[in-house]
Image (cartoon, helix red, strand yellow):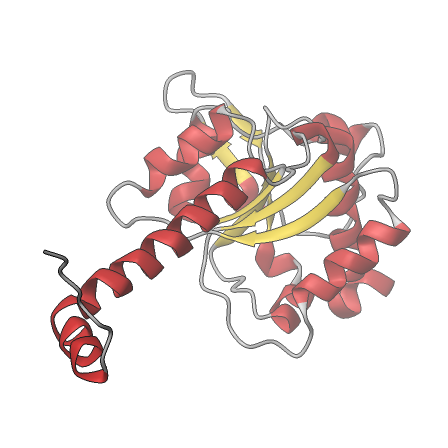
Length: 215
């Protein structure tokens, strides 16, 4: 005896009425699998060819586009680097300091812009370059700037050192929707692009100081 199950409109309707979720699940799994494959296999520039500016704050609507700025700086200042990028970080309210410590320890990010709490946390562990030697040798020209907010006193050694440039001294950052009040910029000590990060920081000092830059 031969059994046949002809395909009819009624059978198709019944099938999808009870098994629709299987197709939805299959589509979701396919999308997830494709995304996982792309993420794990796509090319990622090595750290020494990836200059990154990490910003640990809210990004507001600005008059100018920060990504456009990074593209322009890539072409004009860093043509030999594969990637020059701005990254707005989402820091967990409970584990934000731990997240930053992991990134700094791994050499992720080259220039950090953080609020005073996070900045002090990293500076206390000497995760940022001490900037005084670079000011003394002329790498950084910060004449006329109030750098007091960038000085940190190490609680263990009592040593006071300059680890950052206060963002309030760079009002041009606001044009890109960045918060300046109570923020500082520091160069990651474990980053592999120290020279480029200092060049980027000097560009900001030269071009984002507002009227003070020409005085």
